[in-house]
Structure formats: C-alpha cells, structure tokens
Length: 430
Ligand code: ADP
Image (cartoon, rainbow, N blue to C red; front, side, top):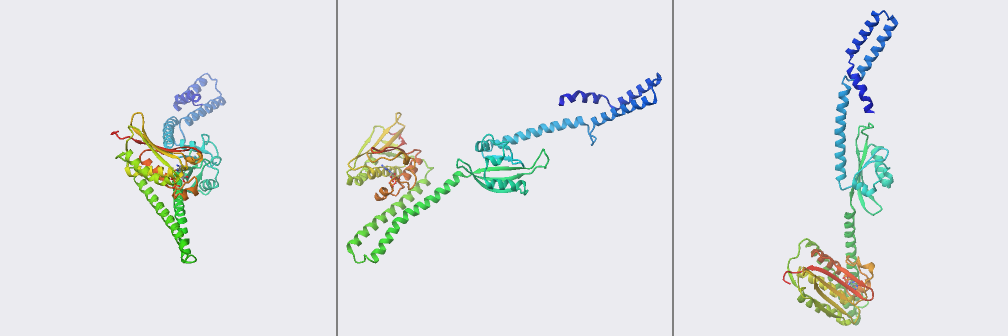
C-alpha cells in the first residue's frame, strides 16, 4: 500500500502551487489567443485547476501546517524506536525467571514470558486467561482491575494441577484508553511451593515430636497415679510399674538426645569435615556395642575392612553415630541366629571408601525405602517402639552423610535382608 502511494506523492510534490498557477494562466492565454475559449470553458478550466491546487496543498500539509512527508518520516523513526523499546521490554520480561502475563480487557492474554508459557502452556497467548487460571478468586481480581478500576487486586494464591503453588499479584498497567495503548492487567507469579513445604514440615515435626513425647509421658503419669492410689501397698505391682516408668523415661531422654543431635548436625551442615578417621578401630568398638544388643537373639557381627579402605576423611564423632545407628538397627531388626556383616572397600583409584552394613533380617518393602530417612518414619511402628526406637536414627544418618557430601543407599529384599551403604572420601594416608 505504501509503495503504490509513492509515485503519486512524488508527482504532487513536484507540482507546487506556483507551477499550477503558471500552467493555468498559460492555457488560459493560449485558448484566449486562438479565440477558442468561451466564458464557460474559462470557468471550467479555472475550477479544475483550483481544485488540483487545493488537492496539492492538502497533500503537502496537515491541519497543524506540518509537512506530511516530514511527519510521516519522523513517525516512522518514532515507530521504529517504539518497536525496538517494545522488543527490549519483551526480552527483559522473558528473562525474568518468574511467570508474568499481560491480560487485556477482554481477558485475552496478550503477552506471556517464557516462565509463564512453561507454567501454563505454550498456547496461553491469545487465549482467555480464565481457561488457564480457572479459579474464582483470579476472576474476581481481574474484574477489580477492569470493572472497578482498582490499581492492585491484591495477592491471590494459585495452585496448579502439578501441586505448584504461587502468590499471584495482579495490578493495572495504565494505558491511555486508546486502541494503541489500552489499559491492561499484569499478573506476576511468585512461587511459594518450597516455602509451604518447609512450613508444613515444621508443623509436622512439632506435632510428631510432641506426640512422641506425650505417649511415654502419659504412661509415666498414669503409673504415678496408680502407685499413689490403688497400687499404693502392692509391692510387686510397684516394682513392675517403676520398671516401665524407667523404660519410658529413658525413651524420652533418647528422643530428646536425638532431637538435639539433629539440630546440632543441621547447624554444622555447611562445614566440611576434614579429619582422618581410622575405620578398623572405630568399627571394632561399634561392633562391641551392637553385639551386646543382638546377643540376646544370637546375632553375630562379622567385619571385613579391605586393604586401602582403612582411613577416611570424616568427622569422627558423627561417623561414629552413623555406624552406631546402622549397626544397632541391624541388631534390632535382624532375624534371630543370623549374622550382620560390616565392611569397607576402596574404589578403583583409592579415592573413596564404601562402607556397608548388611543384615539377614526381614527386609523392607520397596514402597518404604524412599521414606526411611524421614523423621519419625517407621516401617513397623509397634516393633520400633518395642525396641526402644525413636524413629529418628536414619534421619540423623542422612543429615550426617549430607554434611559429608554423601548419600545413604538402601537395598533390601523381603525375607533376605537389607544392606545400608554410603561412600566417604578416602584419606591420602591409605
Ligand atoms: P527407629 O528408631 O524406629 O529404629 P530409624 O530411623 O532408625 O528409627 O529407622 C526407621 C525405620 O526403618 C525403623 O522403624 C524400621 O522399621 C526400619 N529399619 C531400619 N533399619 C532396618 C533394618 N536393618 N531392617 C529392617 N528395617 C529397618
């Protein structure tokens, strides 16, 4: 369209007002000299020429007197600049890692940055926003912007089908109201999924810890009341109840020790351990403790520390706690008359040592493996409590290993047994 207008504009720009008057006069004089012109023809020629002159004037200038050619050129430059600014803005919004949508008055999405497309789908632009954010509170918020003329519609919590939660801020992007710059709404999504998970974990943790303490505490209070009342003079009952009270009190002490130990480990999480630990000495002393727990059910311990796997880089106290928790668990949960194998082996280039504790116990069903290191998670609640477990042993192991840049691996076969293993950095002294 622009190209077809070009020659016409050029022609008109050549025919200035003065030239047209000269042509008019020349024609007029020529026909007059030949006596060919009548008064009527003179009027016609004059009108046509004046019309042409007016047309030229209108083409050359606008109502403000500015030359249209100049204006068009400057508006093209301005348009180009505006286009460039728009594309820089779009690129900047695309670079924001949080989802952003620009929504029109008709609820159509006119812009979505990459994060928003990732969250809501590549087809979000051009679609009605309500198709993608089907929540009544989002609808209300957008109404507040366009219908009530509010600047901010507050923060709305939005959860998508993948259980990701966002705090969505919806605010007005003021336009001039014209077709070119209409009023729009901007939706900014701030992800709060992990914050909510942490909050939930804290709530669950307090609830679980309180529950774990309340159970033995209620039992102790019950026995105290019985001993003060009906069993006051019953010596055998008193002996039995005092024994139970002692067990329950010890359980509470263990629980508090484990809780304190967990928070101490978490505090040192980012300090890398750098001392050298002699594995054979440590494993031998741990096996002595664990054997005494398994002795009643005739559980034996066998150790095998391969050459080159004697020394590791670790925090000695924390490694001791890991080995005690795993060995004591093996002694507690392994079947009667079986053996627990504690071993250490270096990798091919002697840079790391893998330590494993294998029992011939009942094994653990696959579905429990991923949750074993959660605080207070137990496969068999009754058995764990009967064994005096706090449900925190493997959580402690996991956190200590995280500090050592290591992970706890669990392999188990129901009816055959379980292997817990982890890898530590080998000491250069091996
Ligand atoms: P607990 O104090 O209950 O032993 P842990 O965190 O040490 O808590 O262990 C969590 C659960 O994992 C235990 O309750 C038990 O059900 C299971 N478990 C741990 N070690 C073994 C094992 N060697 N064999 C079978 N189950 C085990």
